[in-house]
Image (cartoon, rainbow over all chains, first blue to last red):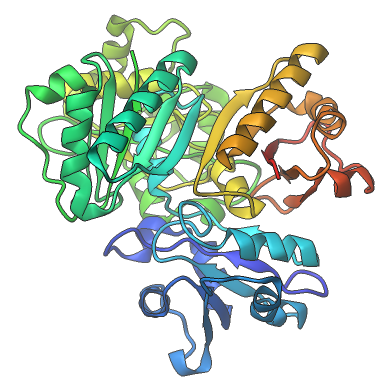
Length: 239
Length: 239
């Protein structure tokens, strides 16, 4: 609790099947274990995560609400009612940090509007880990979410991102649905200029973690990485 | 160690004066405590951080090298020599995550070029914590570093960022040298449109943490936050 209101506590979640000691500070785990009210992207992964961190309450005694698709002010207020009654509410997405490349921002915005303190906890973000490890520009970067799926549109978008990267010396970060990773990788190799640098970061924080950062020219001469159905991020910086 | 080479281990550092259990996972602390070779942005803060996390080696037995301003390949190779000899090398910036809004990316890039594994550890990033807690768009965002100092140029840049934010629904993140925070805050209130949302996140992860997210219109009707000489991030999302 923080003052008369409880807080909306932003709880990062595992990126893969690892123990919490790898990705969550001890104080964050303790804070999460003291919460009984949760708003989550997915109830099943949230229950698994609460078990992973050793939450002491039996699941049936926890209040686990799923973030609605259509989040009007009234439904957000209902989700935040425990905070207004003095209890902390934990927000969790399916993986990584809530409200970053994941739902939850509208609940956070509503908490600010209601004067409920918002407390972000330290935890794993695949975007940030990939950026750190890329060796690309960390002074200027943009996260662009998903690229278009149709080939022609995706190629156009890759060219746009590469042009902007060159003009602004900006690292461009994007993601793909895991089963489309290989198609995106092929499109990057076919589209980008040879001296553009491309980092691929796969299975971050897990024992399968694999990160490589090379020019497109060098990638073209290498065996293709195993990317099918594995969570990966893609980062480019034009030369 | 990872294979024949040691790894370049990216070690996040405290954002303020807190115990490591607040911001570092236990496994990251253990990994850091097993390293004897460090490359750091600032030797004094690095020594303080190694003491904070309870590194078991006496400081005089650790090899602590400072990242050079001019980092040609030869000097980077010298810094990475311990990794080529099979020892992990820890990279630390003054605060937060190395190579993100901080030096180190060229060393990381050189490690990739030499085939040295790069291992990012989970830790605090003020950029990511502020974004999570802002309630602004976490599906599309850009980190823009510092804005220009002269008033006219800063105003022009704020307008540019706000226009781009509106066009792309993109959250714009930027920072300022702490003693100029109040001037930047005033410039944002004077320049941005009333319905642009502005989040200010100060002293993240510390007991003084303070995060507020409001429209510019609402900020104009509030007492000014205390921002002088305190680390803060600024985020806008145009309406």
